[in-house]
Length: 195
Image (cartoon, rainbow, N blue to C red; front, side, top):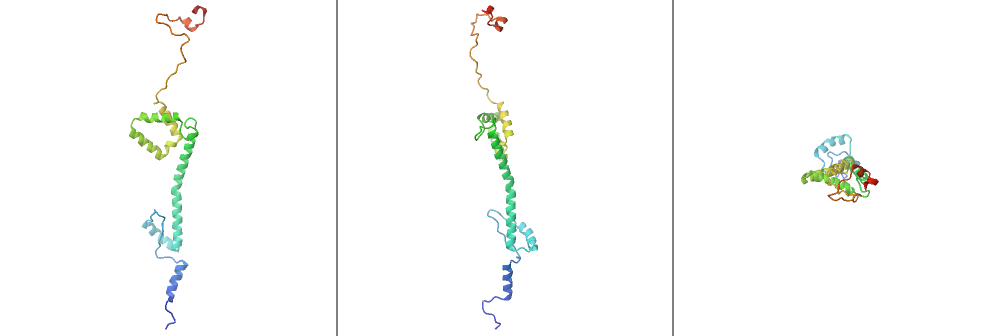
């Protein structure tokens, strides 16, 4: 017998296990990615030699990949957050503006009427809907300068309002047979010669 009992590991087995436990560089990296994401094969092929050159273990390589994913996600979300903040500030400015907003939560009634008048002047409902979708998608519909310009444009297409008089003329109505007053009487109706 060679002094080994059954179940004992050979020295080469111990070396492999020790390497694995100590974090040896793997021949092939296995990466876990968050749900909904896919790691392209080309990326794995590009990073594997770099990670091996750096003598990264599988765990270390995964940490690097996780950090990369987190940084990419933050950089992708940053412009959207900035865009949403800009639109939110525009909305607040519009609501606070006495010409545009109602001071509480929306546009003033007169601004809405003017903007609707501009849309009605276009006449093509399909075009108006496409235009509104573009405004919502780009956020320009929240921009105070755009709303001011569009409301000003719409004010030219609004129907006129009723003209209220100031009551009957102090001269009253004259019959058809009466002569018009002379220029002097019209200019100075209270002169003694006017009666």
